[in-house]
Length: 639
Image 1 (cartoon, rainbow, N blue to C red):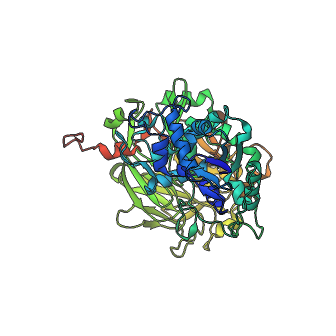
Image 2: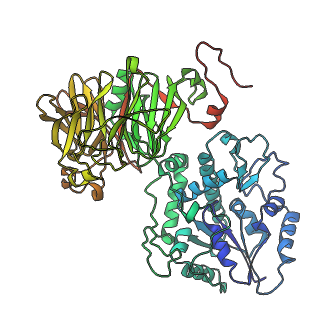
Image 3: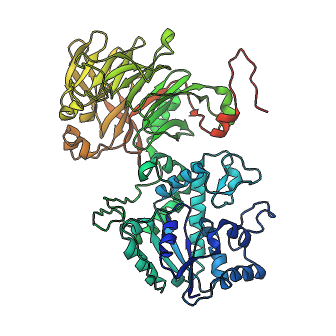
């Protein structure tokens, strides 16, 4: 054979497509190590004997007999002078040092891809069960283990699949980086899946030239779909939950930073490809990751307020798909991120929590007895265990609130798509209770962008809308100047001409609102409609709650393309994302929690009073194997 090439990459990096394209040349062949069975017998033969303990590549050096057997797999099969052997298997990423030693002339192609794309695809691959590599792995339970085994696999038992995939990705990438340090750079060539998609012919030619090979494959106008592709019906790609990706990559932050920096020279940061030869024939954009962590900083006063009031805060951020619990901890703050699909409204009561997501409402109840099962064991004073998921359809749920007293089981929410106020109903998508007088009928047209509510005596007495329009998306033309506050009992508009009002609240016998378009906190006279601005803040205000005289106000970094006509966007001041604390007695800013990274928008801010360390029980291993019964029955653990 003329040459031997190994394509190495983390699983689901798109390396399989490179492999398929090489094989378009009749002189290029797939070798033995492209098959899982051969990887297991030739490179991982003693894995079971060693109790599936994964050692580093240097410690796991091949014996002379193993090398001879490995070499014979290729020398006996490929004897033609023009033969080029190209192998790809995701498991090769952790065997690069062994391969480089066994095949002194072999060269390596390192294929990279956006970490978010790679990990989300990996999770879907696990879910498909098509890629099981260790179906009978001892001690492992849950979905059959897919792709390569990693050193800490036992610690991942019971973890969400996304966490497992992120750990696999990080181990593969770190292994390739470490191997490259001891191998002659002339044996390496680097590429990215994004570059291939931009210019497949050019990139394949560049790689072949770098390998000093002649490759004459003819790439079709539409790239072949890899046999391992996982597409939705119609060839669509699934939406990536960037919030969840960022959370699971946080423990691997150093690897992510190193990897993204490494990719920069050969991976396009932003590409608009509309040329006729575009592989998919449509506009394609490739974006550099904006960051993988949910970073935050806070003033000392924020932690002091939570500590002194025995409170905590729950925040929703729909754009990055997170519900965030903020708690005082050792003089500072602790933030726990929980991933959801477009979370917006959050409702809390003494022992209940509800989250409105893209097409459903999820309810939870407090089960303190489960605290010992949640890390750190015994610390959580409220553990919200999942109870129901009621599918509403995509109705654009905004704010939500529980009733009180005899109405404690009522869960109110604003159905923005249908322009009405609703109650949750087990039997129907939603139960309409009230709509503004100008809305003539129920239709999923978001006619006035009904968005916030203020509870008074256990009912949503005041609601906010962005306009008094009765046409589909009619509010958009007047969003900055036509906002209103409505009394749902009298059906009267008590205040108008507001700039994108959100988050009305009844507190200390006053009606408070956020004029988001101005970035302000204000009060509204329910008699005259007069608006009194208490504070103007550096961001788009949305999400409001109180601890005594202190208002906790959510701030977002508004998007210019959406909110270009608002007063806040006309200012050149910095706009922030986080939660600011305002002393309502004098309008002074007395504390802040500032988010960075991919968290750029806040929707809801709720205070959990008399709760220091809340959490949500979302570990599948726990939700499936532990049971909670009423106090009238014995509590039992599963056998």
